[in-house]
Length: 376
Image 1 (cartoon, rainbow, N blue to C red):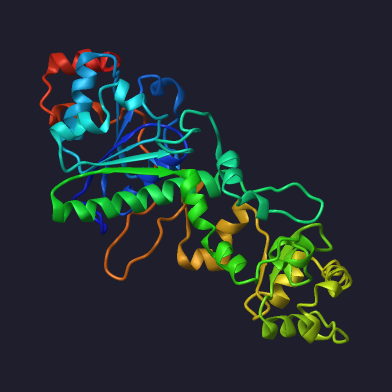
Image 2 (image 1 turned 90 degrees about the horizontal axis):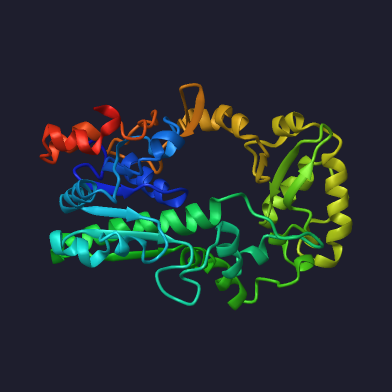
Protein backbone atom coordinates (compact mmCIF):
# COMPACT_ATOMS: atom_id res chain seq x y z
CA UNK A 1 0.00 0.00 0.00
CA UNK A 2 1.26 3.48 -0.88
CA UNK A 3 2.13 6.01 1.77
CA UNK A 4 -0.27 8.83 2.47
CA UNK A 5 -3.94 9.11 3.47
CA UNK A 6 -5.09 8.03 -0.01
CA UNK A 7 -2.82 4.98 -0.13
CA UNK A 8 -4.46 1.98 -1.79
CA UNK A 9 -6.56 4.03 -4.23
CA UNK A 10 -5.95 3.65 -7.96
CA UNK A 11 -6.74 6.61 -10.21
CA UNK A 12 -6.60 6.73 -14.01
CA UNK A 13 -5.76 10.15 -15.45
CA UNK A 14 -6.46 10.84 -19.10
CA UNK A 15 -3.55 13.12 -19.99
CA UNK A 16 -4.33 16.76 -20.70
CA UNK A 17 -3.12 20.22 -19.77
CA UNK A 18 -3.67 22.44 -16.74
CA UNK A 19 -6.24 21.37 -14.17
CA UNK A 20 -6.49 17.66 -15.07
CA UNK A 21 -2.82 16.87 -14.35
CA UNK A 22 -3.02 19.05 -11.23
CA UNK A 23 -5.92 16.97 -9.88
CA UNK A 24 -3.80 13.87 -10.46
CA UNK A 25 -0.84 15.49 -8.73
CA UNK A 26 -2.93 16.36 -5.67
CA UNK A 27 -4.17 12.79 -5.36
CA UNK A 28 -0.73 11.30 -6.02
CA UNK A 29 0.83 13.59 -3.40
CA UNK A 30 -1.63 12.11 -0.88
CA UNK A 31 -0.59 8.54 -1.73
CA UNK A 32 -2.98 7.47 -4.48
CA UNK A 33 -1.59 5.37 -7.32
CA UNK A 34 -2.15 7.60 -10.35
CA UNK A 35 -1.64 6.19 -13.85
CA UNK A 36 -1.48 8.74 -16.67
CA UNK A 37 -2.71 7.58 -20.07
CA UNK A 38 -0.74 9.67 -22.55
CA UNK A 39 -1.28 10.06 -26.26
CA UNK A 40 1.51 8.59 -28.44
CA UNK A 41 2.41 12.14 -29.51
CA UNK A 42 3.46 12.78 -25.92
CA UNK A 43 6.62 10.82 -26.66
CA UNK A 44 7.58 13.66 -28.98
CA UNK A 45 6.10 16.72 -27.30
CA UNK A 46 5.89 16.26 -23.54
CA UNK A 47 9.10 16.70 -21.60
CA UNK A 48 9.93 14.40 -18.71
CA UNK A 49 10.21 15.56 -15.11
CA UNK A 50 7.42 18.12 -14.95
CA UNK A 51 6.16 18.76 -11.43
CA UNK A 52 2.53 17.89 -12.09
CA UNK A 53 3.43 14.32 -13.12
CA UNK A 54 5.36 13.60 -9.93
CA UNK A 55 4.45 10.41 -8.11
CA UNK A 56 2.56 8.99 -11.12
CA UNK A 57 3.08 6.15 -13.56
CA UNK A 58 2.79 6.79 -17.29
CA UNK A 59 1.68 4.78 -20.29
CA UNK A 60 1.32 5.95 -23.91
CA UNK A 61 -1.57 4.34 -25.78
CA UNK A 62 -3.21 4.92 -29.16
CA UNK A 63 -6.90 4.91 -28.34
CA UNK A 64 -7.73 4.41 -32.03
CA UNK A 65 -5.96 1.05 -31.88
CA UNK A 66 -8.31 -1.75 -30.68
CA UNK A 67 -5.69 -3.07 -28.26
CA UNK A 68 -5.04 0.45 -26.97
CA UNK A 69 -8.71 0.98 -26.23
CA UNK A 70 -8.87 -2.47 -24.62
CA UNK A 71 -5.91 -1.61 -22.39
CA UNK A 72 -7.52 1.64 -21.22
CA UNK A 73 -10.77 -0.15 -20.45
CA UNK A 74 -8.86 -2.72 -18.40
CA UNK A 75 -7.12 0.05 -16.46
CA UNK A 76 -10.44 1.76 -15.77
CA UNK A 77 -12.10 -1.51 -14.75
CA UNK A 78 -9.58 -1.89 -11.94
CA UNK A 79 -9.59 1.74 -10.80
CA UNK A 80 -11.34 3.62 -8.02
CA UNK A 81 -11.50 6.90 -9.92
CA UNK A 82 -10.91 8.45 -13.33
CA UNK A 83 -9.89 12.02 -14.23
CA UNK A 84 -10.58 13.60 -17.61
CA UNK A 85 -10.55 17.20 -18.77
CA UNK A 86 -11.77 17.07 -22.38
CA UNK A 87 -14.69 18.94 -23.90
CA UNK A 88 -18.05 17.32 -23.15
CA UNK A 89 -18.66 14.37 -25.45
CA UNK A 90 -15.04 13.49 -26.29
CA UNK A 91 -14.84 10.53 -23.89
CA UNK A 92 -18.25 9.29 -25.03
CA UNK A 93 -17.07 9.28 -28.65
CA UNK A 94 -14.08 7.19 -27.59
CA UNK A 95 -16.40 4.68 -25.95
CA UNK A 96 -15.10 5.69 -22.53
CA UNK A 97 -17.99 7.80 -21.23
CA UNK A 98 -19.52 7.29 -17.78
CA UNK A 99 -22.11 4.79 -18.98
CA UNK A 100 -19.45 2.75 -20.80
CA UNK A 101 -17.20 2.66 -17.75
CA UNK A 102 -20.01 1.97 -15.27
CA UNK A 103 -20.82 -1.25 -17.08
CA UNK A 104 -17.41 -2.65 -16.22
CA UNK A 105 -16.87 -0.86 -12.91
CA UNK A 106 -20.04 0.30 -11.13
CA UNK A 107 -18.02 1.71 -8.20
CA UNK A 108 -15.95 4.03 -10.42
CA UNK A 109 -15.89 7.73 -9.49
CA UNK A 110 -15.73 9.57 -12.79
CA UNK A 111 -14.09 12.99 -12.36
CA UNK A 112 -14.67 15.52 -15.13
CA UNK A 113 -13.05 18.96 -14.98
CA UNK A 114 -13.93 21.56 -17.62
CA UNK A 115 -14.24 25.30 -17.88
CA UNK A 116 -17.95 25.67 -18.49
CA UNK A 117 -19.24 22.30 -17.25
CA UNK A 118 -20.90 19.31 -18.89
CA UNK A 119 -24.17 21.14 -19.51
CA UNK A 120 -25.39 24.66 -20.26
CA UNK A 121 -25.31 26.98 -23.29
CA UNK A 122 -21.51 27.43 -23.13
CA UNK A 123 -20.60 23.78 -22.51
CA UNK A 124 -19.08 23.31 -25.98
CA UNK A 125 -17.44 26.74 -26.21
CA UNK A 126 -13.69 27.20 -26.04
CA UNK A 127 -12.31 29.17 -23.12
CA UNK A 128 -9.47 29.71 -20.70
CA UNK A 129 -8.93 30.66 -17.07
CA UNK A 130 -9.54 34.39 -17.56
CA UNK A 131 -12.88 33.77 -19.29
CA UNK A 132 -14.26 31.48 -16.57
CA UNK A 133 -13.21 33.89 -13.83
CA UNK A 134 -14.80 36.79 -15.73
CA UNK A 135 -18.19 35.08 -16.02
CA UNK A 136 -18.41 34.47 -12.26
CA UNK A 137 -17.99 38.14 -11.38
CA UNK A 138 -14.70 37.40 -9.60
CA UNK A 139 -12.60 39.25 -12.18
CA UNK A 140 -14.59 42.42 -11.59
CA UNK A 141 -13.32 42.58 -7.99
CA UNK A 142 -9.66 42.14 -9.01
CA UNK A 143 -9.25 45.77 -9.88
CA UNK A 144 -8.31 49.23 -8.78
CA UNK A 145 -9.54 52.65 -9.87
CA UNK A 146 -8.84 53.29 -13.55
CA UNK A 147 -6.99 50.00 -14.16
CA UNK A 148 -8.25 46.94 -16.05
CA UNK A 149 -8.94 43.86 -13.90
CA UNK A 150 -6.03 41.43 -13.71
CA UNK A 151 -5.31 38.07 -12.08
CA UNK A 152 -2.33 35.74 -11.56
CA UNK A 153 -2.18 33.34 -14.51
CA UNK A 154 -4.07 30.01 -14.11
CA UNK A 155 -4.36 30.11 -10.32
CA UNK A 156 -7.98 31.09 -9.74
CA UNK A 157 -9.86 29.40 -12.58
CA UNK A 158 -7.79 26.37 -13.60
CA UNK A 159 -6.32 25.37 -10.28
CA UNK A 160 -8.59 26.71 -7.50
CA UNK A 161 -11.97 26.72 -9.23
CA UNK A 162 -11.32 23.66 -11.37
CA UNK A 163 -8.71 21.25 -10.06
CA UNK A 164 -9.20 21.77 -6.34
CA UNK A 165 -12.97 21.32 -6.56
CA UNK A 166 -12.49 18.28 -8.80
CA UNK A 167 -10.12 16.68 -6.29
CA UNK A 168 -12.48 17.51 -3.42
CA UNK A 169 -15.43 16.11 -5.34
CA UNK A 170 -13.59 12.90 -6.23
CA UNK A 171 -12.64 12.26 -2.61
CA UNK A 172 -16.22 13.00 -1.49
CA UNK A 173 -17.60 10.56 -4.07
CA UNK A 174 -15.04 7.90 -3.08
CA UNK A 175 -16.19 8.15 0.53
CA UNK A 176 -19.84 7.89 -0.54
CA UNK A 177 -19.06 4.87 -2.73
CA UNK A 178 -17.77 2.97 0.31
CA UNK A 179 -21.28 3.04 1.75
CA UNK A 180 -23.38 2.83 -1.41
CA UNK A 181 -21.17 0.56 -3.50
CA UNK A 182 -21.80 2.82 -6.49
CA UNK A 183 -19.68 5.38 -8.25
CA UNK A 184 -20.92 8.59 -9.84
CA UNK A 185 -19.90 11.46 -12.10
CA UNK A 186 -18.19 14.48 -10.55
CA UNK A 187 -18.88 17.50 -12.83
CA UNK A 188 -16.27 20.05 -11.74
CA UNK A 189 -16.67 23.19 -13.83
CA UNK A 190 -14.25 26.03 -13.24
CA UNK A 191 -17.08 28.53 -13.59
CA UNK A 192 -18.91 26.71 -10.75
CA UNK A 193 -15.85 26.47 -8.52
CA UNK A 194 -14.81 30.10 -8.89
CA UNK A 195 -18.39 31.10 -8.20
CA UNK A 196 -18.26 29.12 -4.96
CA UNK A 197 -15.00 30.84 -4.05
CA UNK A 198 -16.79 34.19 -4.06
CA UNK A 199 -19.00 33.16 -1.12
CA UNK A 200 -17.27 35.52 1.31
CA UNK A 201 -17.66 38.48 -1.05
CA UNK A 202 -21.37 37.73 -1.48
CA UNK A 203 -21.72 37.52 2.30
CA UNK A 204 -19.99 40.87 2.70
CA UNK A 205 -22.26 42.42 0.05
CA UNK A 206 -25.37 41.09 1.76
CA UNK A 207 -24.29 42.58 5.08
CA UNK A 208 -23.55 45.97 3.51
CA UNK A 209 -19.82 45.76 4.23
CA UNK A 210 -18.75 45.35 0.61
CA UNK A 211 -18.64 48.64 -1.32
CA UNK A 212 -19.12 48.43 -5.11
CA UNK A 213 -17.05 51.58 -5.76
CA UNK A 214 -13.30 50.84 -5.70
CA UNK A 215 -12.60 54.21 -4.10
CA UNK A 216 -14.60 53.11 -1.05
CA UNK A 217 -13.51 49.46 -0.85
CA UNK A 218 -10.16 48.71 0.75
CA UNK A 219 -10.07 45.25 -0.90
CA UNK A 220 -9.90 47.03 -4.26
CA UNK A 221 -6.55 48.71 -3.62
CA UNK A 222 -7.68 52.24 -2.84
CA UNK A 223 -6.87 52.47 0.87
CA UNK A 224 -3.62 53.37 2.66
CA UNK A 225 -3.51 50.07 4.56
CA UNK A 226 -4.33 47.24 2.11
CA UNK A 227 -2.24 47.15 -1.06
CA UNK A 228 1.20 46.72 -2.59
CA UNK A 229 3.58 49.68 -2.28
CA UNK A 230 6.75 50.50 -4.20
CA UNK A 231 10.03 50.76 -2.30
CA UNK A 232 13.16 52.84 -2.91
CA UNK A 233 14.76 50.05 -4.96
CA UNK A 234 11.73 49.60 -7.23
CA UNK A 235 10.60 46.42 -5.48
CA UNK A 236 7.32 46.04 -3.66
CA UNK A 237 5.94 45.19 -0.22
CA UNK A 238 2.38 44.44 0.86
CA UNK A 239 0.40 45.86 3.75
CA UNK A 240 -2.85 44.35 5.05
CA UNK A 241 -3.58 46.20 8.29
CA UNK A 242 -7.37 45.86 8.15
CA UNK A 243 -8.08 45.74 11.88
CA UNK A 244 -7.77 49.02 13.86
CA UNK A 245 -5.09 47.68 16.22
CA UNK A 246 -2.96 46.57 13.29
CA UNK A 247 -3.41 49.92 11.51
CA UNK A 248 -2.42 51.74 14.67
CA UNK A 249 0.79 49.73 14.87
CA UNK A 250 1.45 50.32 11.18
CA UNK A 251 1.32 54.10 11.63
CA UNK A 252 3.63 53.84 14.62
CA UNK A 253 6.21 51.73 12.81
CA UNK A 254 6.07 53.99 9.76
CA UNK A 255 6.61 56.94 12.14
CA UNK A 256 3.50 58.69 10.84
CA UNK A 257 2.60 59.89 14.31
CA UNK A 258 0.51 62.83 13.13
CA UNK A 259 -2.04 60.58 11.40
CA UNK A 260 -5.15 59.74 13.41
CA UNK A 261 -5.84 55.96 13.53
CA UNK A 262 -9.51 56.72 14.13
CA UNK A 263 -9.79 57.99 10.53
CA UNK A 264 -8.83 54.58 9.09
CA UNK A 265 -12.23 53.86 7.55
CA UNK A 266 -13.10 57.38 6.42
CA UNK A 267 -12.77 56.73 2.68
CA UNK A 268 -12.78 60.48 1.99
CA UNK A 269 -9.38 60.64 3.70
CA UNK A 270 -7.88 57.69 1.81
CA UNK A 271 -6.27 59.50 -1.16
CA UNK A 272 -4.24 61.80 1.11
CA UNK A 273 -3.46 59.07 3.68
CA UNK A 274 -2.46 56.67 0.93
CA UNK A 275 0.02 59.15 -0.51
CA UNK A 276 1.57 59.67 2.92
CA UNK A 277 2.02 55.91 3.38
CA UNK A 278 3.29 55.44 -0.18
CA UNK A 279 5.78 58.28 0.19
CA UNK A 280 7.08 56.79 3.42
CA UNK A 281 7.50 53.32 1.87
CA UNK A 282 9.49 54.89 -0.99
CA UNK A 283 12.15 56.04 1.47
CA UNK A 284 13.57 52.54 2.12
CA UNK A 285 14.39 49.42 0.14
CA UNK A 286 12.34 46.27 0.28
CA UNK A 287 15.03 44.59 2.37
CA UNK A 288 15.04 47.47 4.86
CA UNK A 289 11.25 47.37 5.25
CA UNK A 290 11.37 43.61 5.62
CA UNK A 291 13.87 43.94 8.45
CA UNK A 292 11.66 46.53 10.17
CA UNK A 293 8.18 45.07 9.62
CA UNK A 294 8.29 41.34 8.92
CA UNK A 295 6.90 39.27 11.78
CA UNK A 296 5.10 42.22 13.37
CA UNK A 297 1.37 42.82 13.67
CA UNK A 298 1.23 45.34 10.82
CA UNK A 299 0.28 42.48 8.44
CA UNK A 300 3.30 42.73 6.17
CA UNK A 301 5.04 40.64 3.52
CA UNK A 302 7.51 41.47 0.76
CA UNK A 303 6.49 40.72 -2.84
CA UNK A 304 8.90 37.92 -3.77
CA UNK A 305 9.82 36.31 -7.05
CA UNK A 306 9.26 32.57 -7.39
CA UNK A 307 12.94 31.88 -6.69
CA UNK A 308 12.99 34.26 -3.72
CA UNK A 309 9.86 32.64 -2.31
CA UNK A 310 11.46 29.19 -2.44
CA UNK A 311 14.44 30.50 -0.45
CA UNK A 312 12.53 32.56 2.13
CA UNK A 313 13.28 31.38 5.70
CA UNK A 314 9.62 30.76 6.55
CA UNK A 315 9.02 28.68 3.43
CA UNK A 316 12.31 26.86 3.99
CA UNK A 317 11.40 26.09 7.60
CA UNK A 318 8.10 24.55 6.53
CA UNK A 319 9.62 22.75 3.56
CA UNK A 320 7.22 24.47 1.19
CA UNK A 321 9.54 24.11 -1.81
CA UNK A 322 11.93 21.34 -2.77
CA UNK A 323 14.66 21.46 -5.39
CA UNK A 324 14.43 18.59 -7.88
CA UNK A 325 16.92 18.30 -10.75
CA UNK A 326 17.91 21.93 -10.31
CA UNK A 327 14.34 23.29 -10.34
CA UNK A 328 12.01 24.24 -7.52
CA UNK A 329 8.79 22.31 -6.97
CA UNK A 330 6.08 23.22 -4.46
CA UNK A 331 5.68 20.65 -1.71
CA UNK A 332 2.47 18.71 -1.18
CA UNK A 333 -0.20 20.36 0.96
CA UNK A 334 -1.82 20.14 3.45
CA UNK A 335 0.20 18.39 6.18
CA UNK A 336 -1.15 15.64 8.45
CA UNK A 337 -0.35 14.77 12.07
CA UNK A 338 0.05 11.03 11.30
CA UNK A 339 -0.08 10.35 7.57
CA UNK A 340 3.06 10.75 5.51
CA UNK A 341 2.87 12.49 2.15
CA UNK A 342 5.10 12.08 -0.86
CA UNK A 343 8.05 14.37 -1.31
CA UNK A 344 8.32 16.19 -4.67
CA UNK A 345 10.20 14.18 -7.25
CA UNK A 346 10.93 13.95 -10.94
CA UNK A 347 7.91 12.99 -13.00
CA UNK A 348 8.11 9.93 -15.26
CA UNK A 349 8.95 10.23 -18.93
CA UNK A 350 5.81 9.81 -21.05
CA UNK A 351 5.16 6.10 -21.43
CA UNK A 352 7.92 5.10 -19.02
CA UNK A 353 5.77 2.48 -17.29
CA UNK A 354 3.95 1.19 -20.35
CA UNK A 355 5.55 -2.22 -20.64
CA UNK A 356 5.18 -2.92 -16.92
CA UNK A 357 1.56 -1.81 -16.79
CA UNK A 358 0.58 -3.80 -19.88
CA UNK A 359 2.19 -6.87 -18.33
CA UNK A 360 0.20 -6.32 -15.14
CA UNK A 361 -2.97 -6.16 -17.25
CA UNK A 362 -2.24 -9.55 -18.78
CA UNK A 363 -1.13 -8.55 -22.28
CA UNK A 364 1.35 -10.95 -23.88
CA UNK A 365 4.64 -10.05 -25.54
CA UNK A 366 3.14 -9.90 -29.03
CA UNK A 367 0.35 -7.57 -27.94
CA UNK A 368 2.78 -5.36 -26.04
CA UNK A 369 4.99 -5.14 -29.14
CA UNK A 370 1.95 -4.07 -31.17
CA UNK A 371 1.03 -1.38 -28.63
CA UNK A 372 4.57 -0.17 -28.01
CA UNK A 373 6.27 -0.37 -31.41
CA UNK A 374 8.93 2.16 -30.42
CA UNK A 375 10.09 -0.24 -27.70
CA UNK A 376 10.02 -3.35 -29.85
